[in-house]
Length: 455
Ligand SMILES: C[S@@+](CC[C@H](N)C(=O)[O-])C[C@H]1O[C@@H](n2cnc3c(N)ncnc32)[C@H](O)[C@@H]1O
Ligand code: SF4
Image (cartoon, rainbow, N blue to C red; front, side, top):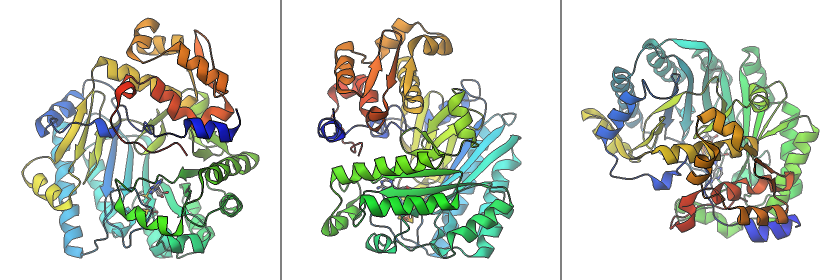
Protein backbone atom coordinates (compact mmCIF):
# COMPACT_ATOMS: atom_id res chain seq x y z
CA UNK A 1 0.00 0.00 0.00
CA UNK A 2 1.15 3.56 -0.54
CA UNK A 3 1.55 5.85 2.48
CA UNK A 4 -1.57 7.76 1.40
CA UNK A 5 -3.59 4.52 1.32
CA UNK A 6 -2.17 3.46 4.68
CA UNK A 7 -3.08 6.82 6.17
CA UNK A 8 -6.62 6.55 4.85
CA UNK A 9 -6.95 3.15 6.52
CA UNK A 10 -4.92 3.47 9.72
CA UNK A 11 -4.98 7.13 10.73
CA UNK A 12 -7.74 6.47 13.23
CA UNK A 13 -7.82 7.29 16.96
CA UNK A 14 -5.68 4.84 18.97
CA UNK A 15 -3.95 5.11 22.38
CA UNK A 16 -0.43 6.55 22.54
CA UNK A 17 0.49 3.78 25.00
CA UNK A 18 2.72 5.94 27.18
CA UNK A 19 1.22 3.71 29.85
CA UNK A 20 -0.69 0.46 29.87
CA UNK A 21 -3.56 0.69 30.43
CA UNK A 22 -3.81 4.22 28.98
CA UNK A 23 -4.51 7.01 31.47
CA UNK A 24 -8.16 7.32 30.45
CA UNK A 25 -8.72 3.90 32.04
CA UNK A 26 -7.65 5.14 35.47
CA UNK A 27 -10.45 4.81 38.02
CA UNK A 28 -11.71 7.24 40.63
CA UNK A 29 -12.27 4.33 42.98
CA UNK A 30 -8.47 4.18 43.40
CA UNK A 31 -7.93 6.07 46.66
CA UNK A 32 -5.14 7.66 48.69
CA UNK A 33 -5.09 4.48 50.77
CA UNK A 34 -4.53 2.39 47.62
CA UNK A 35 -1.67 4.70 46.67
CA UNK A 36 -0.03 4.33 50.10
CA UNK A 37 -0.37 0.54 49.91
CA UNK A 38 1.12 0.48 46.40
CA UNK A 39 4.06 2.68 47.47
CA UNK A 40 4.82 0.43 50.45
CA UNK A 41 4.56 -2.68 48.24
CA UNK A 42 6.87 -1.11 45.66
CA UNK A 43 9.75 -1.47 48.14
CA UNK A 44 9.65 -5.23 47.73
CA UNK A 45 7.92 -5.82 44.37
CA UNK A 46 9.49 -4.80 41.06
CA UNK A 47 12.38 -2.54 40.19
CA UNK A 48 14.50 -1.33 43.15
CA UNK A 49 15.65 1.89 41.49
CA UNK A 50 13.74 5.07 42.13
CA UNK A 51 12.74 7.65 39.54
CA UNK A 52 11.22 10.91 40.70
CA UNK A 53 9.02 13.12 38.56
CA UNK A 54 8.07 16.67 39.57
CA UNK A 55 5.33 18.52 37.71
CA UNK A 56 5.53 22.33 37.64
CA UNK A 57 2.26 23.45 36.01
CA UNK A 58 2.99 27.16 35.56
CA UNK A 59 3.76 28.95 32.29
CA UNK A 60 4.29 32.62 31.52
CA UNK A 61 2.10 32.42 28.45
CA UNK A 62 0.09 29.53 27.15
CA UNK A 63 0.89 28.18 23.71
CA UNK A 64 -2.33 27.54 21.79
CA UNK A 65 -1.33 23.99 20.82
CA UNK A 66 -0.40 22.81 24.28
CA UNK A 67 -1.82 19.48 25.41
CA UNK A 68 -0.08 19.50 28.81
CA UNK A 69 -1.60 20.45 32.15
CA UNK A 70 -0.36 24.05 32.22
CA UNK A 71 -1.69 27.27 33.73
CA UNK A 72 -0.79 30.86 32.95
CA UNK A 73 -0.45 31.77 36.60
CA UNK A 74 2.62 33.56 37.82
CA UNK A 75 1.58 35.06 41.18
CA UNK A 76 4.65 34.54 43.40
CA UNK A 77 2.64 33.66 46.52
CA UNK A 78 0.73 30.94 44.65
CA UNK A 79 3.95 29.50 43.26
CA UNK A 80 5.50 29.54 46.78
CA UNK A 81 2.53 27.67 48.25
CA UNK A 82 2.71 25.16 45.43
CA UNK A 83 6.43 24.51 45.84
CA UNK A 84 5.97 24.13 49.57
CA UNK A 85 3.23 21.52 48.95
CA UNK A 86 5.59 19.61 46.65
CA UNK A 87 8.22 19.57 49.45
CA UNK A 88 5.57 18.19 51.82
CA UNK A 89 4.59 15.52 49.33
CA UNK A 90 8.23 14.48 48.90
CA UNK A 91 8.60 14.29 52.69
CA UNK A 92 5.53 12.08 53.08
CA UNK A 93 6.48 9.74 50.25
CA UNK A 94 10.09 9.41 51.46
CA UNK A 95 8.71 8.16 54.80
CA UNK A 96 7.03 5.25 52.99
CA UNK A 97 10.05 4.32 50.90
CA UNK A 98 12.96 2.07 51.74
CA UNK A 99 15.81 4.60 51.89
CA UNK A 100 18.32 1.93 50.82
CA UNK A 101 16.83 2.04 47.34
CA UNK A 102 18.94 4.15 44.97
CA UNK A 103 17.72 7.12 42.94
CA UNK A 104 18.51 6.74 39.24
CA UNK A 105 16.51 9.56 37.66
CA UNK A 106 14.85 12.86 38.49
CA UNK A 107 12.74 14.54 35.83
CA UNK A 108 11.05 17.95 35.95
CA UNK A 109 8.22 18.50 33.50
CA UNK A 110 5.24 20.71 33.12
CA UNK A 111 4.07 23.27 32.36
CA UNK A 112 7.39 25.01 32.52
CA UNK A 113 9.72 24.05 35.37
CA UNK A 114 12.07 26.84 34.32
CA UNK A 115 9.60 29.48 35.57
CA UNK A 116 11.03 28.65 39.01
CA UNK A 117 14.21 30.36 40.18
CA UNK A 118 17.17 27.97 39.83
CA UNK A 119 17.71 28.21 43.62
CA UNK A 120 14.21 26.77 44.20
CA UNK A 121 14.91 23.89 41.80
CA UNK A 122 18.23 23.29 43.56
CA UNK A 123 16.44 22.99 46.93
CA UNK A 124 14.01 20.48 45.45
CA UNK A 125 16.90 18.41 44.07
CA UNK A 126 18.66 18.53 47.42
CA UNK A 127 15.51 17.45 49.20
CA UNK A 128 15.05 14.47 46.86
CA UNK A 129 18.65 13.38 47.10
CA UNK A 130 19.13 13.93 50.83
CA UNK A 131 17.10 10.91 51.91
CA UNK A 132 18.46 8.37 49.40
CA UNK A 133 21.68 7.20 47.83
CA UNK A 134 22.09 7.41 44.04
CA UNK A 135 23.31 5.18 41.28
CA UNK A 136 26.51 6.33 39.60
CA UNK A 137 25.60 9.35 37.44
CA UNK A 138 21.85 9.58 38.01
CA UNK A 139 20.00 11.47 35.30
CA UNK A 140 18.67 14.84 36.50
CA UNK A 141 16.61 16.26 33.67
CA UNK A 142 14.52 19.36 33.09
CA UNK A 143 12.18 20.59 30.35
CA UNK A 144 13.10 24.19 29.49
CA UNK A 145 11.29 26.94 27.60
CA UNK A 146 14.23 28.95 26.17
CA UNK A 147 12.06 32.01 25.44
CA UNK A 148 12.70 33.60 28.83
CA UNK A 149 16.09 32.33 30.00
CA UNK A 150 19.30 34.35 30.07
CA UNK A 151 22.89 33.16 30.34
CA UNK A 152 22.98 33.40 34.15
CA UNK A 153 19.92 31.23 34.46
CA UNK A 154 21.37 28.46 32.26
CA UNK A 155 24.57 28.55 34.30
CA UNK A 156 22.61 28.31 37.57
CA UNK A 157 20.66 25.32 36.27
CA UNK A 158 23.87 23.38 35.75
CA UNK A 159 24.99 24.47 39.26
CA UNK A 160 21.66 23.17 40.62
CA UNK A 161 22.68 19.65 39.56
CA UNK A 162 20.88 19.23 36.23
CA UNK A 163 22.76 17.16 33.67
CA UNK A 164 20.12 16.67 30.95
CA UNK A 165 18.24 19.51 29.30
CA UNK A 166 15.28 19.37 26.99
CA UNK A 167 14.89 22.57 24.98
CA UNK A 168 11.36 23.32 23.76
CA UNK A 169 12.17 24.69 20.31
CA UNK A 170 9.04 23.47 18.43
CA UNK A 171 9.95 25.39 15.26
CA UNK A 172 12.70 27.83 14.28
CA UNK A 173 10.27 29.74 12.06
CA UNK A 174 9.10 32.75 14.07
CA UNK A 175 5.91 33.07 12.00
CA UNK A 176 4.84 29.63 13.19
CA UNK A 177 5.74 30.46 16.79
CA UNK A 178 3.78 33.70 16.61
CA UNK A 179 0.61 32.05 15.37
CA UNK A 180 0.76 29.54 18.24
CA UNK A 181 1.46 32.29 20.82
CA UNK A 182 5.02 31.27 21.65
CA UNK A 183 8.20 33.23 22.18
CA UNK A 184 11.37 32.22 20.33
CA UNK A 185 14.55 31.56 22.30
CA UNK A 186 15.89 34.60 24.14
CA UNK A 187 19.53 33.60 23.58
CA UNK A 188 20.72 32.22 20.26
CA UNK A 189 20.27 28.48 20.72
CA UNK A 190 23.93 27.85 19.81
CA UNK A 191 24.95 29.94 22.86
CA UNK A 192 22.73 27.86 25.14
CA UNK A 193 24.26 24.68 23.77
CA UNK A 194 27.75 26.02 24.30
CA UNK A 195 27.00 26.79 27.96
CA UNK A 196 25.48 23.37 28.59
CA UNK A 197 28.19 21.47 26.69
CA UNK A 198 30.87 23.05 28.88
CA UNK A 199 29.27 21.16 31.78
CA UNK A 200 29.02 17.92 29.76
CA UNK A 201 25.25 18.01 29.92
CA UNK A 202 23.05 15.95 27.61
CA UNK A 203 20.91 18.03 25.26
CA UNK A 204 17.56 17.23 23.70
CA UNK A 205 15.43 19.41 21.43
CA UNK A 206 11.66 19.17 21.09
CA UNK A 207 10.20 19.96 17.66
CA UNK A 208 6.51 19.87 16.86
CA UNK A 209 4.97 19.26 13.42
CA UNK A 210 1.40 19.67 12.25
CA UNK A 211 1.00 23.28 13.41
CA UNK A 212 -0.64 26.06 11.35
CA UNK A 213 1.61 27.58 8.63
CA UNK A 214 3.98 24.60 8.68
CA UNK A 215 4.60 22.84 5.38
CA UNK A 216 6.95 19.99 4.50
CA UNK A 217 9.63 22.36 3.21
CA UNK A 218 9.53 24.77 6.16
CA UNK A 219 9.63 22.00 8.73
CA UNK A 220 12.55 20.39 6.88
CA UNK A 221 14.37 23.73 7.30
CA UNK A 222 13.68 23.69 11.03
CA UNK A 223 15.01 20.13 11.28
CA UNK A 224 18.13 21.14 9.32
CA UNK A 225 18.72 24.09 11.72
CA UNK A 226 18.37 21.73 14.66
CA UNK A 227 20.85 19.24 13.15
CA UNK A 228 23.40 22.00 12.70
CA UNK A 229 23.30 22.53 16.45
CA UNK A 230 23.99 18.82 17.01
CA UNK A 231 21.83 18.00 20.03
CA UNK A 232 22.33 14.46 21.36
CA UNK A 233 18.63 13.79 20.97
CA UNK A 234 15.82 15.29 18.97
CA UNK A 235 12.13 14.61 19.29
CA UNK A 236 9.70 15.34 16.47
CA UNK A 237 6.31 15.38 18.19
CA UNK A 238 3.24 14.94 16.05
CA UNK A 239 0.87 17.72 17.08
CA UNK A 240 -2.06 16.03 18.84
CA UNK A 241 -5.16 18.07 18.12
CA UNK A 242 -7.57 17.16 20.92
CA UNK A 243 -9.74 20.28 21.43
CA UNK A 244 -12.29 18.21 23.36
CA UNK A 245 -9.57 17.86 26.04
CA UNK A 246 -7.94 21.28 25.61
CA UNK A 247 -10.34 23.92 24.30
CA UNK A 248 -7.47 26.37 23.81
CA UNK A 249 -6.42 24.40 20.72
CA UNK A 250 -9.63 25.39 18.88
CA UNK A 251 -8.16 28.80 18.00
CA UNK A 252 -5.64 27.07 15.69
CA UNK A 253 -8.49 25.95 13.44
CA UNK A 254 -9.00 29.61 12.47
CA UNK A 255 -5.59 29.69 10.74
CA UNK A 256 -6.05 26.08 9.67
CA UNK A 257 -4.05 22.94 10.30
CA UNK A 258 -1.99 21.18 7.61
CA UNK A 259 -3.74 18.34 5.77
CA UNK A 260 -2.85 14.88 7.07
CA UNK A 261 -0.90 14.02 3.89
CA UNK A 262 1.22 17.17 4.31
CA UNK A 263 1.69 16.33 7.98
CA UNK A 264 2.86 12.82 7.22
CA UNK A 265 5.28 14.18 4.59
CA UNK A 266 6.70 16.51 7.27
CA UNK A 267 7.40 13.48 9.43
CA UNK A 268 8.82 11.34 6.61
CA UNK A 269 11.09 14.13 5.34
CA UNK A 270 12.26 15.03 8.85
CA UNK A 271 13.07 11.37 9.50
CA UNK A 272 15.00 11.07 6.25
CA UNK A 273 17.07 14.22 6.90
CA UNK A 274 17.81 13.15 10.45
CA UNK A 275 18.87 9.67 9.42
CA UNK A 276 21.07 11.04 6.66
CA UNK A 277 22.70 13.26 9.29
CA UNK A 278 23.57 10.20 11.38
CA UNK A 279 20.70 10.23 13.86
CA UNK A 280 19.04 6.92 14.72
CA UNK A 281 15.31 6.54 15.24
CA UNK A 282 14.18 5.41 18.67
CA UNK A 283 10.52 4.51 18.69
CA UNK A 284 8.35 6.67 16.54
CA UNK A 285 9.56 10.16 17.17
CA UNK A 286 12.90 10.18 19.01
CA UNK A 287 16.17 10.51 17.11
CA UNK A 288 19.53 10.10 18.79
CA UNK A 289 23.21 10.13 17.92
CA UNK A 290 25.01 6.79 17.77
CA UNK A 291 26.95 7.81 20.89
CA UNK A 292 23.79 8.34 22.94
CA UNK A 293 22.97 5.82 25.66
CA UNK A 294 19.44 5.41 24.29
CA UNK A 295 20.92 4.01 21.08
CA UNK A 296 23.12 1.56 22.98
CA UNK A 297 20.07 0.59 25.04
CA UNK A 298 18.06 -0.03 21.87
CA UNK A 299 20.75 -2.37 20.58
CA UNK A 300 21.00 -4.24 23.89
CA UNK A 301 17.26 -4.58 24.48
CA UNK A 302 17.56 -2.19 27.45
CA UNK A 303 15.24 0.49 26.14
CA UNK A 304 12.30 1.45 28.29
CA UNK A 305 9.48 3.94 28.01
CA UNK A 306 7.44 5.82 30.58
CA UNK A 307 5.32 8.99 30.72
CA UNK A 308 8.51 11.06 30.61
CA UNK A 309 9.60 9.48 27.31
CA UNK A 310 12.24 6.90 26.46
CA UNK A 311 14.90 5.95 28.97
CA UNK A 312 17.29 3.10 29.56
CA UNK A 313 16.90 0.33 32.09
CA UNK A 314 19.97 1.84 33.81
CA UNK A 315 18.10 5.02 34.73
CA UNK A 316 14.56 3.71 34.93
CA UNK A 317 13.06 2.97 38.27
CA UNK A 318 9.55 2.86 39.56
CA UNK A 319 8.35 6.45 39.19
CA UNK A 320 7.14 8.42 42.24
CA UNK A 321 5.52 11.59 40.94
CA UNK A 322 4.87 14.87 42.76
CA UNK A 323 2.69 17.86 41.96
CA UNK A 324 -0.65 18.45 40.26
CA UNK A 325 -1.70 15.91 37.66
CA UNK A 326 1.51 13.90 38.27
CA UNK A 327 1.27 10.15 37.66
CA UNK A 328 3.23 7.67 39.74
CA UNK A 329 4.11 4.52 37.79
CA UNK A 330 4.74 1.62 40.14
CA UNK A 331 5.25 -2.04 39.32
CA UNK A 332 1.61 -2.90 39.97
CA UNK A 333 -0.23 0.44 40.04
CA UNK A 334 -0.62 3.89 38.57
CA UNK A 335 -1.75 6.79 40.75
CA UNK A 336 -2.61 10.27 39.53
CA UNK A 337 -2.81 13.46 41.60
CA UNK A 338 -5.53 16.10 41.41
CA UNK A 339 -5.33 18.34 38.32
CA UNK A 340 -6.42 21.43 40.24
CA UNK A 341 -3.68 23.47 41.93
CA UNK A 342 -5.75 24.63 44.95
CA UNK A 343 -7.23 21.18 45.43
CA UNK A 344 -3.76 19.63 45.26
CA UNK A 345 -2.35 22.03 47.87
CA UNK A 346 -5.33 21.42 50.19
CA UNK A 347 -5.13 17.65 49.89
CA UNK A 348 -1.38 17.59 50.54
CA UNK A 349 -1.90 19.51 53.80
CA UNK A 350 -3.72 16.50 55.23
CA UNK A 351 -2.39 13.52 53.27
CA UNK A 352 -1.79 12.67 49.63
CA UNK A 353 -3.49 14.15 46.55
CA UNK A 354 -4.34 10.93 44.63
CA UNK A 355 -7.68 11.28 42.83
CA UNK A 356 -7.52 8.30 40.51
CA UNK A 357 -5.38 5.39 39.54
CA UNK A 358 -5.30 1.81 38.48
CA UNK A 359 -4.12 -1.41 40.03
CA UNK A 360 -2.70 -3.76 37.40
CA UNK A 361 -3.63 -7.42 37.58
CA UNK A 362 -1.33 -10.12 36.25
CA UNK A 363 -2.85 -9.98 32.75
CA UNK A 364 -2.44 -6.18 32.58
CA UNK A 365 1.22 -6.53 33.57
CA UNK A 366 1.80 -9.04 30.76
CA UNK A 367 0.09 -6.83 28.16
CA UNK A 368 2.08 -3.84 29.42
CA UNK A 369 5.33 -5.73 28.72
CA UNK A 370 4.13 -6.88 25.28
CA UNK A 371 3.11 -3.38 24.19
CA UNK A 372 6.17 -1.68 25.63
CA UNK A 373 8.47 -4.17 23.90
CA UNK A 374 6.74 -3.60 20.57
CA UNK A 375 6.69 0.20 20.92
CA UNK A 376 10.39 0.35 21.93
CA UNK A 377 11.87 -2.18 19.53
CA UNK A 378 9.36 -2.34 16.65
CA UNK A 379 9.60 -6.09 17.03
CA UNK A 380 8.47 -8.82 19.33
CA UNK A 381 9.81 -12.30 19.87
CA UNK A 382 7.36 -14.38 21.91
CA UNK A 383 10.06 -16.81 23.12
CA UNK A 384 12.35 -14.00 24.27
CA UNK A 385 9.46 -12.37 26.14
CA UNK A 386 8.49 -15.70 27.67
CA UNK A 387 12.06 -16.19 28.98
CA UNK A 388 12.20 -12.63 30.35
CA UNK A 389 8.86 -12.86 32.17
CA UNK A 390 9.10 -16.57 33.06
CA UNK A 391 5.60 -17.03 31.65
CA UNK A 392 4.68 -19.45 28.87
CA UNK A 393 4.28 -18.09 25.33
CA UNK A 394 0.75 -19.42 25.26
CA UNK A 395 -0.23 -17.54 28.41
CA UNK A 396 1.31 -14.33 27.08
CA UNK A 397 -0.61 -14.62 23.80
CA UNK A 398 -3.82 -15.39 25.68
CA UNK A 399 -3.41 -12.21 27.76
CA UNK A 400 -3.39 -10.19 24.54
CA UNK A 401 -5.99 -9.85 21.78
CA UNK A 402 -3.57 -11.51 19.33
CA UNK A 403 -5.54 -12.63 16.30
CA UNK A 404 -3.52 -14.01 13.42
CA UNK A 405 -6.23 -13.14 10.83
CA UNK A 406 -5.84 -9.44 11.67
CA UNK A 407 -2.07 -9.75 11.56
CA UNK A 408 -2.30 -11.27 8.07
CA UNK A 409 -4.15 -8.10 7.06
CA UNK A 410 -1.34 -5.96 8.55
CA UNK A 411 1.18 -8.09 6.66
CA UNK A 412 -0.76 -7.78 3.39
CA UNK A 413 -0.91 -4.02 3.86
CA UNK A 414 2.89 -4.01 4.29
CA UNK A 415 3.13 -2.64 7.82
CA UNK A 416 4.40 -5.82 9.46
CA UNK A 417 5.98 -9.21 8.87
CA UNK A 418 5.23 -12.04 11.26
CA UNK A 419 5.24 -15.75 11.88
CA UNK A 420 4.46 -17.97 14.85
CA UNK A 421 7.66 -16.91 16.64
CA UNK A 422 7.93 -13.19 16.14
CA UNK A 423 6.66 -10.00 14.53
CA UNK A 424 8.60 -7.16 12.97
CA UNK A 425 7.17 -3.76 12.04
CA UNK A 426 8.31 -2.72 8.54
CA UNK A 427 9.88 0.73 7.96
CA UNK A 428 6.60 1.77 6.30
CA UNK A 429 4.67 0.47 9.30
CA UNK A 430 6.50 2.39 12.05
CA UNK A 431 4.03 5.26 11.72
CA UNK A 432 1.30 2.80 12.68
CA UNK A 433 2.96 0.91 15.52
CA UNK A 434 0.23 2.28 17.83
CA UNK A 435 -2.40 0.54 15.64
CA UNK A 436 -0.50 -2.74 15.89
CA UNK A 437 -0.20 -2.34 19.68
CA UNK A 438 -3.94 -1.62 19.83
CA UNK A 439 -4.59 -4.89 17.98
CA UNK A 440 -2.91 -6.71 20.89
CA UNK A 441 -4.99 -4.86 23.48
CA UNK A 442 -8.24 -6.60 24.48
CA UNK A 443 -9.61 -3.32 25.84
CA UNK A 444 -9.64 -1.92 22.31
CA UNK A 445 -12.13 -4.57 21.19
CA UNK A 446 -14.88 -2.65 23.00
CA UNK A 447 -13.42 0.74 23.86
CA UNK A 448 -15.63 3.79 24.35
CA UNK A 449 -12.68 6.15 25.04
CA UNK A 450 -11.36 9.00 22.88
CA UNK A 451 -7.79 8.92 21.56
CA UNK A 452 -5.65 10.99 19.21
CA UNK A 453 -4.66 9.83 15.71
CA UNK A 454 -1.16 8.48 14.90
CA UNK A 455 -0.48 11.32 12.43
C1 LIG B 1 5.71 20.41 28.83
S1 LIG B 1 6.14 20.82 27.28
C2 LIG B 1 7.79 21.50 27.32
C3 LIG B 1 8.32 22.38 28.35
C4 LIG B 1 8.17 23.85 28.15
N1 LIG B 1 6.94 24.25 28.73
C5 LIG B 1 8.21 24.30 26.73
O1 LIG B 1 7.17 24.69 26.23
O2 LIG B 1 9.28 24.33 26.14
C6 LIG B 1 6.66 19.29 26.58
C7 LIG B 1 6.55 19.14 25.08
O3 LIG B 1 5.28 18.65 24.76
C8 LIG B 1 5.06 18.90 23.39
N2 LIG B 1 3.63 19.18 23.21
C9 LIG B 1 2.89 20.10 23.84
N3 LIG B 1 1.62 20.07 23.38
C10 LIG B 1 1.56 19.09 22.44
C11 LIG B 1 0.53 18.57 21.62
N4 LIG B 1 -0.71 19.05 21.65
N5 LIG B 1 0.83 17.55 20.78
C12 LIG B 1 2.08 17.05 20.73
N6 LIG B 1 3.10 17.50 21.49
C13 LIG B 1 2.85 18.51 22.33
C14 LIG B 1 5.91 20.10 22.99
O4 LIG B 1 6.77 19.76 21.94
C15 LIG B 1 6.66 20.41 24.27
O5 LIG B 1 8.00 20.75 24.05
S1 SF4 C 1 4.20 24.14 25.43
FE1 SF4 C 1 5.27 24.60 27.33
S2 SF4 C 1 5.14 26.84 27.58
FE2 SF4 C 1 3.66 26.27 26.04
S3 SF4 C 1 1.78 26.10 27.25
FE3 SF4 C 1 2.66 24.04 27.03
S4 SF4 C 1 3.85 23.76 28.83
FE4 SF4 C 1 3.43 25.95 28.68
